[in-house]
Amino acid sequence: MGPDFELEQAARAQGHIRIAGVDEVGRGPLAGPVTAAAVVLDPACIPEGLNDSKKLTAKTRARLAEAIWACADVSIAHASVAEIEEHNILRASHLAMQRAVDGLAGGADYVLIDGNMVPRTLALPSAPIIKGDARSVSIAAASIVAKISRDAIMMDLAAQFPGYGWETNMGYGSKKHMSALSELGVTPHHRRLFKPIHNILYQG
Image 1 (cartoon, rainbow, N blue to C red):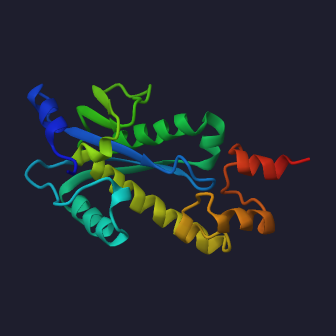
Image 2 (image 1 turned 45 degrees about the horizontal axis):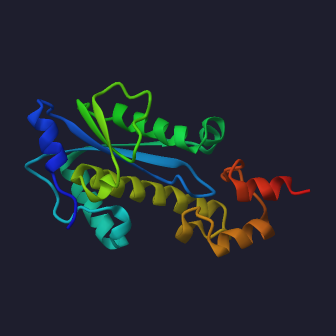
């Protein structure tokens, strides 16, 4: 069973009209930004087949992303490698989430957030939803557009910094990525405080 609209309906029953689902992608990679999306779905136009982006094929994700952009209020935001290093990855992901919510054209009056924490700067009524991308269609939609957006950034960076395999590993520490780090070294897009990068930079 996939995600449904029940959490959104419960918020609507409390009088909230614009319910945003928020998710982030890119907390684990060794390179690239962390990306968040906020999506307010139109209850009359919910694309069929929404699910956790990790459970979908690339082709299905692309099709659904197009459908989401066509009939929902969507906002995507990022926190840079410099911000990840300044704040830590958790705070940086929350910064990206806050920016995504702030970027919604029509705003939001209630926010469903994937995970077990609400960003401390978020002043709107909100609820953290563990495994939210498998429970809420709004969070699932956010997971899809966030992944598509971050993947595009990593493919662009892969063209500028060939050899690390970012076009397929999206900055995660795959075998090819780790081997390229040994051979080619660390780029400006690597997260220098993440242990594998830190060890390369400061070993001995």
